[in-house]
Length: 419
Image 1: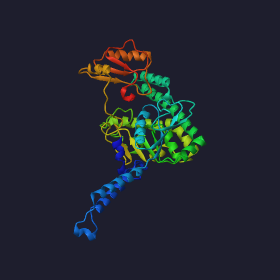
Image 2: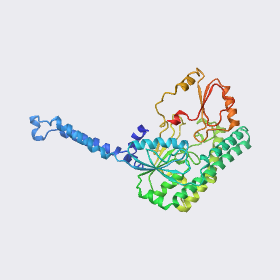
Image 3: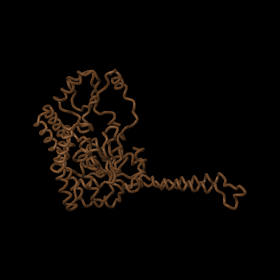
Image 4: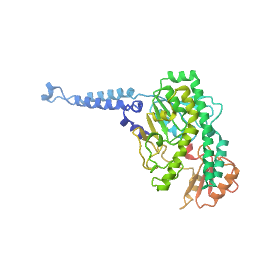
């Protein structure tokens, strides 16, 4: 993350002031000043040059010290308002928040009262908690468990047209319900005049948000703040499709499972997947937000156009992992920014991993939103893992399955998440 931030000066002041907020623009001025002062101190006055008079080294040292002290207040710290998304999205956002805090910036995080992971108290930011009557279904363990169970049942009949329809029907219902809750949450913020006044009077320099659920996109527009996205997905799929040309002949769509090398039939299928996501945008995801835009911003404004107006997109991927595709100048690829130097495993876990031999280790996790599939499905997974030659590390929060094999170790928290 630090190396990426250090490279922002190449974008200049036009890209929402990141260079200014990180204090890099003043370092350019400082470098020029030091160079000029160095030349002056090493060039004696014209009337004394013929005598070879030089300034004493002591004076140069004092000037250098003064320049260093002068540079300290020039590294301006900004005030940044953060509107995150919970779950694994917050684990990514938290890394940026901590990095910005380490650079001296003042961070304020908006969080809902139902949040799982965004804590109210932190040494890295000040939080503003907003009451939310109904939690998002993505924050509901029971809902996500039933959704995943239903999805698995549908996938058993994969290949039939009815399974295809049922899969997207199940997905669209989950997404539609969540978008409605997010839109209502944004309305709650807009209608809280004291909160809006507090946010306006605070004088924030920048708005940092994850647009997967675009409540933060609308709030940034409402507050008229420069906007930076920490993004991989938006509310209708891959974020690239919103910001850059994405030819369907070699850019695979979400859920297609294609590569960039597609034959004619696969390209036709890719167009079909794209049409499904276009349908999701206009008839599933966007309607709740469009109602908010019409109410508070007037006609002619929609969430997609607000997204496309963002100043910078910090894209959580990299072409090491992704297929070649067109991009845009205000897209900065930060894939792998979560990577940290590895730490030693606990001794018992280290011995378990090393005992895998040539077969290796499988990591099983359902992400941050699910830790248990229920007793029946857990027994099925445990029995399947027991038949494998590999060692299995399984993040599991439910009761221990009876069919658990000796090659499987259950953990409540994976160490990468814990750190």
